[in-house]
Image (cartoon, rainbow, N blue to C red; front, side):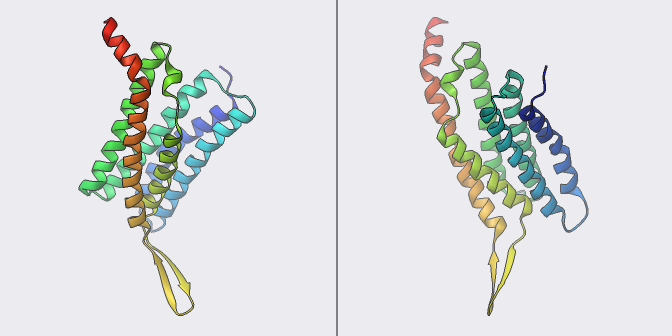
Amino acid sequence: MKLTVPTILTLLRILLIPVLVLVFYLPYNWTNFAAAFVFILASVTDWLDGWIARAYNQSSAFGAFLDPVADKLMVAVALLLIVQKHPTPWMALWAAVIVGREIAVSALREWMAELGQRARVKVATIGKIKTIVQMVALTFLLYFEPLRFELPGRTLVVPVFTIGDWMLAVAALLTLWSGLAYLRAAWPTLREDARNS
């Protein structure tokens, strides 16, 4: 198996997962910044490996398998860390929706691939929007501290955690929407298989 640059970037994203966990639990006051930075770095490699694969025709079957696995692992670990630090019912619900949808869609894609119908459940625009909102939300929640900007005569405070919390709720709703879009695309095949079994 030849390792392409996109595959190396995907492997790097997987290697960043234990780094994220480590810096998250370090007993220093800058660990939230470090955790957010590691997550941003992982998110950039996610975009970069896809861009390089398309621009330089470096796609591979192994890379196509590994890329979504790396994404889901990074998101799931980040959600676990956030829920552990901020154990509210709503945070747990949003995390459960996101992780549950990822498992269900992965299983659906695998099943459709076995039937030779994988193209029916390709990533849609709503899925890409969901990913962007989710990545920004998780970055804000990992950082969590308010940002303060000194302006002439007053201080502007940006409630990073609150913004991230609301964005995660939006990401969870987009997750359900995109999950239904995958299910709708696969529904004719599901009905056909049910009739033939």
